[in-house]
Length: 313
Image (cartoon, rainbow, N blue to C red; front, top):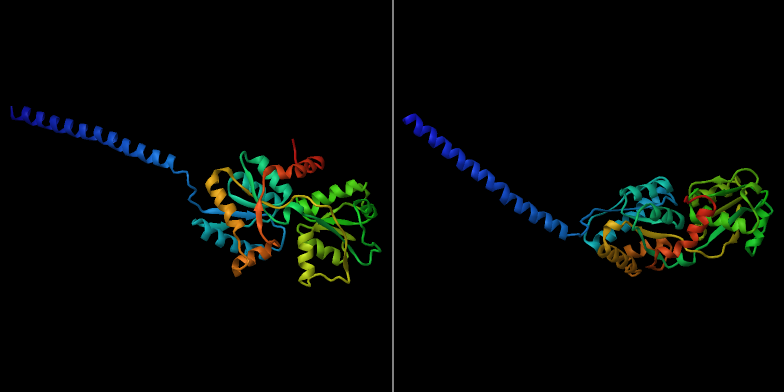
């Protein structure tokens, strides 16, 4: 009998324990559901916000100045912001596509390429100079080439050696090639295959050294280097500045959300030359201010990219 009572006691305790365990998941499930609902309701991007840029200039210059951009945006947005450098234009597009970069300073072509690979990606801001951007053709002073006044005059480049910048550069390859085509000059008309220097700075150096007779690059970089006394004008000269087109712009991934994207745009537009650090950012970008932009502004860039085979489909 004692053994029977003992057995009943154990069974009773086990049943109570099972009831307690069964209740726990129900309570825990309710808490988890509440957490999930809270998570679903909180769409705020918590960071870090990882920014990047096409490597169109010296890597040390880019790292230093985009560090300033990251610090400024972090202070304005109230989240951590990090700059992650890349070594090639295509790498910037890939990093944006896979989500390693959230916000990228692209050229016209790379911005279009990136947006076409990420549904909902948006061009959100550009410099004041980017709605009327230009490229320049430069030439060695010993080539016998003289400055020209219109696109048709680019026909004199036929039979010459020429280097572009990066293969995926808008101002250093895409638009210069388009203007050459307008002048009746195909790449096959050059003296040998065109070069691809990799950056605007390198293009200047190659023409200055006489490695190529002609080079095509970003007009803003050319003017900045000339103003800084970093170009030997005894060896290299401006040949032609092209008609205008849309170029550089910031592109944001859709998962940043509309609120954060709006705050980023306002922060960029709010850069103030009266503040030394902010003035340094604007000076680096060669701009007086940033302004709004939209995806449709780059339709002509996309058309040229498809024409010369830099955009598929």
